[in-house]
Image 1 (tube, rainbow, N blue to C red):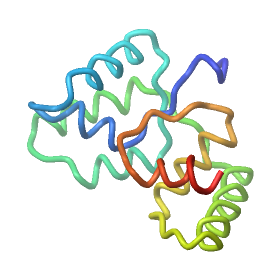
Image 2 (cartoon, rainbow, N blue to C red):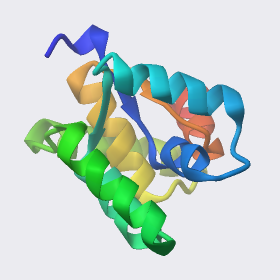
Image 3 (cartoon, rainbow, N blue to C red):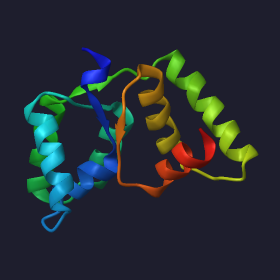
Image 4 (tube, one colour):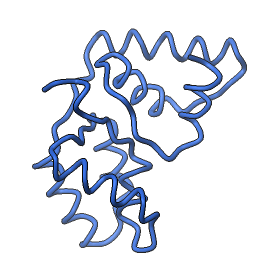
Length: 129
């Protein structure tokens, strides 16, 4: 998998895409990433989606995505980056959910850009990194 060719899609984007009245631009961008086999995620994203799924339709879609979407490994390098990010956030006075820290660390460690719709990532990428 060529890292520059894929995009780590955060839970916030998957949720927006699953909404009936979700942002059309986000839905289309994600659709294109999926069709071109460029969308990836990590197990934290999968867990968040499974934890928040609503109804049989969403459950069916998420299960299909689990079969089709490639996953980035959360390895020792990712955990080390996550620890660094937590410390950097705390030094600067920011509280970012641990799940978002791990997702960001996964993208950074694998050299993969992150697609998100979550202000916590704005804090990480604009104020911390």
